[in-house]
Length: 428
Image 1: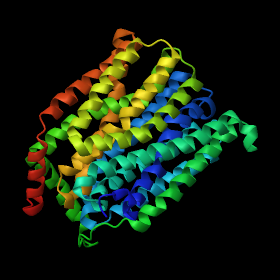
Image 2: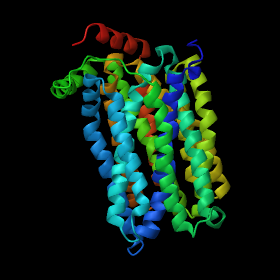
Image 3: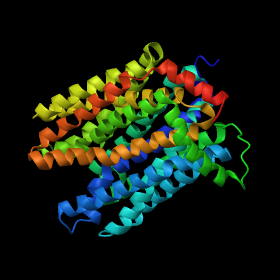
Image 4: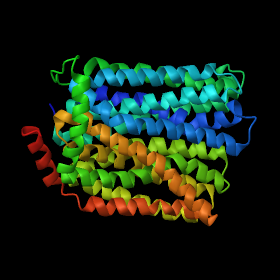
């Protein structure tokens, strides 16, 4: 029965949370909020000022997750409360997103507060969602189930984003007064979508009872956080993988966040860029499943290496492109590898950690991912300012992939798994 994990209710329910929250990542974070913030909530100021405000909100939310993620994961492990923490952060993100349509034109400060808290809720919930992977399936299916989650996310986020784009392009067909009303309704639809499709996880996914006592789990969580640094250093292969992951996922996240900005900088139309974003979403759905097969047959490490090589080729092409059809082809190429590298990274990491401390260790994993999202765009901007060449700035990201690939090549997965299992049997 376990040979087809997607048929199990708990696996399907777990995957549907990715379907649920990816609507926020696609419609709000990557799609409409940056444009609506500049054109509606912050329309009276210079473009550079509105960009600075939005950038600061993104960075502040990411930094808060960086600081809180390891402690939150440790607390959830001690209390056996991954689902409760997930519910709290998901509810925060849902409520903040649902409140965005209430912000009046020109209310940039309130819009940023709600958006920042929404990002915090989204990012915080992913810590506990990722850590539940070890509770819903067996180790030999980590790659496949992790890929199912990302595939569901691409499909779910893409479906709602498609509807939202149609609402923006043809507001009258939906009985809306104009584009502003369509964007506001899109934000509300994300909140509703996120809430509705989160329900299966809370009904059908169970987590092991750790026996944590509510009057002691805070102090125990703090002790566990302190001890984690020693554990990560002791698990040498896990530590090495985390550093490699930090490098290459920095490159992945930078491309996700800066691709539209790069396209605008070299003269492409915003509507064309939105279409490219849709292409990435729908290509990412089957591609994540293909990478699951690669990970299952050849191992997740080799699958990640293939994706890193593909990203290096994408960057070289992006440096030289000058036609919109090339941007569309790059969107396809990114869709082919983006979900795969994310899914296989999560699955490989799950193999390299003690399963009874998954929340704590995935807190560190997500911390590195969010820290990369702070530093990557800064590197791209720094190179662009120094060289006064936007195209050279995109090439700078290649150094992150190269360094990540080198460090990953040094990771002995078998030795790392053995060390993690030993730590389960003989904890520090």
